[in-house]
Length: 80
Image (cartoon, rainbow, N blue to C red; front, side, top):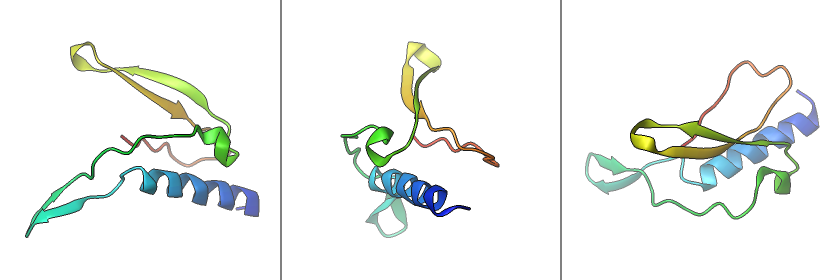
């Protein structure tokens, strides 16, 4: 992996983790997702190319997100 791709990957992971991809303990043995944090900047602020996407969900809801393409990616990661 080139240093640019590694930096982009680390930036994307940092963005994901800073936006609540973890759990917080609420009492012994019980965990909850942390409170949602607003996303203040698009991926382009971290130097990443992206495409806005919309996914139709049940009950008429729409999930908005970004597709961040990567060359030779072995998988696609969805983070909600």
